[in-house]
Length: 305
Ligand code: ADP
Ligand code: MG
Image (cartoon, rainbow, N blue to C red):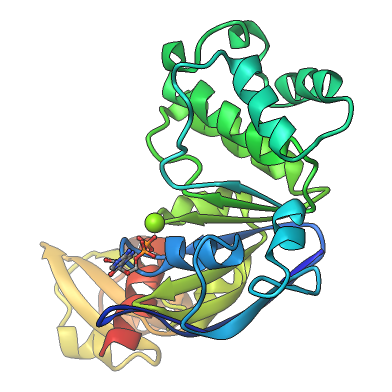
């Protein structure tokens, strides 16, 4: 099970959508493909799934070239496109049957029932697709993507437009699927990768700006944090800036300061010691990690400069 992209470039007319994207995904896992709108996520996914060719570069899926062996690649891949184009007029089973026949799925009837069970469509399976809520339509989309038991699943913004309950359920389902398959899912939401992806590839303006374990995303940046500190009395900004690791200090109100730390070291003791030298004491001090949104912003603006 693998997806290997090498120096993939895609140009639409004059629009450069991908500027030499390379990554390698192997084994069963849920990998997040994170980036703001227009970053190139859908373009990359359409190339992996053989819907559009790259301008240059190559992609292989399980060792097969998407350009030269597209029929074989399509058999290995399940794809949930961004806007999940379902046939609204069909019944759920009828639709899955239609897709299953295209892939010549053996024992299709049985397979459809096990897909319905797997994605939790049971109570809605007798309905027409048009009668389903967005969350159930996404389940139909997942069922069609998996009907031929692909090794690799490509899900383009699978949770967009879902309400909070549906979100939790679909995320749990994707996580479960990722235990047995290679799942690549795109999203523009940082919390999404934190919730379900072990690894995250961040793309911005057609360039990969970060790639690694989701838990280590922070280390690619300043890795800093903020301290909210209340002192017993007045203290000067200069005194705060003298403490090693302090990048900035802003007065919040009265004797309360927000201290920006450009280090991952814990400098709370240093702050307290400095305060004592200035003849004030610390009343409260709380630490706030750099939020993933900020990391994302930092990573995506850095490359844009
Ligand atoms: P994302 O999925 O990350 O939002 P896309 O891959 O859809 O990004 O788009 C990447 C860039 O390529 C955008 O600037 C978009 O406007 C452009 N683009 C996408 N598809 C086409 C197309 N068919 N023709 C021209 N430009 C396109
Ligand atoms: Mg997209």
